[in-house]
Image 1 (spheres, rainbow, N blue to C red):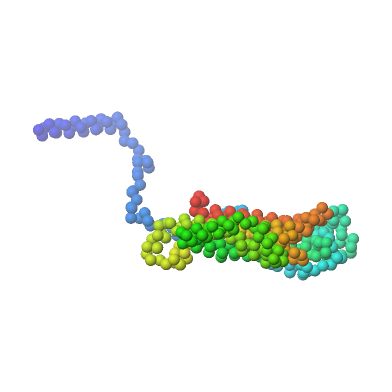
Image 2: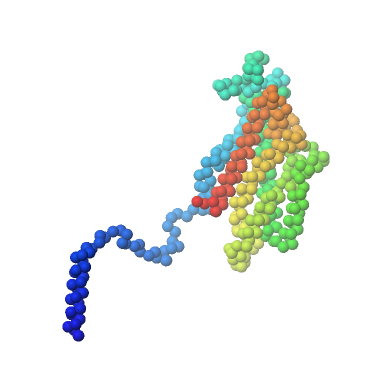
Length: 355
């Protein structure tokens, strides 16, 4: 038996030597090696520095060039609205018929069209012997349009800020209460919203004007009645979605109070949609005020708003185009910038938009 085994071993050795002489050994390459299996205990270990949600959203927001440009425009217009009326040194309601209908003139910017010449090419400043320069020109009463444009921007931004605050307090509170308690409370509150949605804003403002005088107070009252409905619906939808998630149910099971659930869990997770809705509310309010002033239901002279200035410029735009151009540029820049900022915030705060 042992003799047979020895004979077989010698046969195998001779075969291996013969095969190795025919097939030389292959080269050792990188693809012959495999990585060591990952230790499952290290899978949850954080390899880098953690980044908060808001810091990550801010980084993504800054990567959007359109949003950054929009923020710069908003900041610039806001600063001019605050300090612009003081730069000229003239009140927005000061009248002087000697300076009526003067075209814009800025020393050193004549090549840009700020040369004080009217539609016929006549320099009105030299023709009348006026040494003062009006950067945006004057209206038919001799009021400085530079001061009036930035004063009007200030008023329009104030109305938009009031609308945003109404959305923030009334809309968020109403929508949050409706979603959190649900049931009969939610049904009653939503039926009230449906009634308010069916009432046009224009009808509401006309009713207030019949009782009160046209002005900021009437516009703000109209916004109080119906302006917060959109925000309430957005907040209700977000709260209903978040309330059914597991971490809220776990917190409730551990004995968390209603106030803690709202402040610690529901509101922080709904901040993103709330901010985006606020950014869309501001240009809507600016346009609403401008529309009301344009049709004569908003602010009344001598008060200035962008809507009042556009209405004045529309009447005389054939002969004095500059009266319409400057307020039109400002309101267009504001509305476009706020819409771009809202789009950028929506993309930055939405985790599904991450690449």
